[in-house]
Length: 186
Image (cartoon, one colour):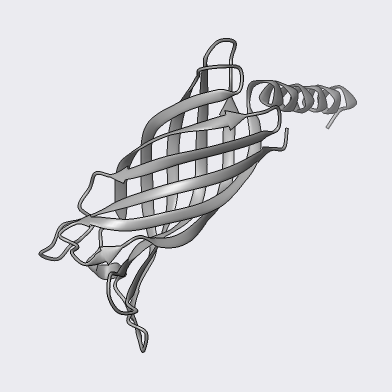
């Protein structure tokens, strides 16, 4: 490779990284989940969990910003009585639009696509894998609010599952409250 081509490639690589960093902010996020299942699932309560992932953020001039995430999320439910827990793990891809009420405070909404990673029922004495009884894909709507400083994003939101995730004779949808803390790396 000639020196001229090497310099051109170096320039293009540097310029594209700078353009990407000017257009998008990349960050890490994590937080708490409080989830349950709705529909035919009687006698279940919310159970705690966590989520962790990455996000891309773009805020052009004005009141609108765009945010996409790739998040590992612990979801499921627990029995109202007894020690049975339903543990789901999803990989979620929410695509959010943030509307800024002030410079720092925003409302957000958008669709969320989810892929089931694992599913099991723990009755306190044994664990039964139930992934084959559930749909591998979920779709829902997300809505919430937050605070966006220069580097830190704090938000609370609700994930409302719209698809029946059960392959058996019952109807289950996911319902998740999330509290998140995000940090923009660049």
